[in-house]
Length: 407
Image (cartoon, rainbow, N blue to C red):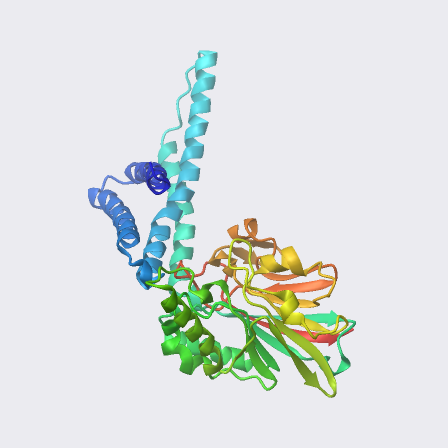
C-alpha cells in the first residue's frame, strides 16, 4: 500500500471519530432532523470539496485560491469538532471510571439526569470559540495589519545612524491576494511610518511571476528616502509547482527576480551594499534563501566578501533557521538579522506580556518577534500576506519598524 493511500485511510478514520462524537452532541441537544443532518451535510461537503480539489488540481498551477478555500473550509468544519472531541471524550473517560468504580464496589451509581445534555452544550460552546476565530480570520483577520515598533541599542553603531529607522515587511505571497483596497491600505500604512529604509525579506509570490501582475502598481508606491532592498524566499524559486520543463522554471525565476526593480526594490543575491550617512556607513547584507529542509542557496561568505568584521551589519535572510544554525554564533558578527518565512503559522494566541503561543514554535525556535542571543538580534516578521490557509487567527499580518540607537 502506498504511503499516500495509507495517509488517506488514517485521516479518514480520524475524521470519522470526529464526526461520530460531534454528531452525538447534536443528537443529545436537538431532535430536529434538519439541524442534525444539515450538520452532517456541511461536514461531508467540506471533506468532499477538499479531496476533490486535491485530486483534480493541476500540479503545474501550483497552489490555487481554490486550494486555499478548500483548506479554509476544512479547518472551519474540523477544528471546532476537535474542541468538542476533547470535552466529550473527557466526559466518556469520567463515565468509564465511574462504571469501573461501581463494578469493583458492587455499588451501582447512576449518572446525574441531564448530565450528557449539559456536557454536549459545553462542547458546542467550546467549539464556537475556534469557529468564530476561523471565520474572523478568513474574512477580517488576514487584513488586520499591525505595526510593531522596536528600539534596538548597539554600542558599535556608527553615531550617524543613531535614530535610523527601518521598516521590514516579508512574505507578501501576492498570488493569494483578492482585495486590492485592503492591500493598498497596508501599503499606505507602511508609508505612514516614514522610515529611512524599507527592507523586504522574501516570498514575493507563491510560485509564479505572473501572480504579481495586478499588484505591481500598488507596491511600487512604497517610499523610503535611503532606499528599498529585498531578498528571495523559498517560494520565489518556483519549487512548489510541477514544471513542463526546466527552461520554463528558469524563465519564471528570472521573471520573479525582474519584479523587484519594477516595484522599486534592489534585489540582493548573496551580495551587500554599504549605506552611507554623514561620512559613516553600515553594511546591508542580503543572502538567498537558506533553510533547514529548503533550498540552501544562501552564501554568507560570498555576500559578505569585502566587508570588514568590525563593520556594523544588518543581514537579510528569509528563513530564521539560518540564524539558529549558522548566523548567531558566526565570528563575523552580524549584529541584526531580519527574517520571515514562518508566518507564525497564521494561527495562535498572542496577548502582550502574558501569552505568546503558536504551533509554529514547535518547528522554529525563533518563530515570531524579536530574539537576542550572544549579543545579536533577530527579528522574525509574522508576514504581510497569507499562504495555504486563507486567513489569520491571532497571528496578525505585520509591519515592523526598527529604530537603531547608539548606546
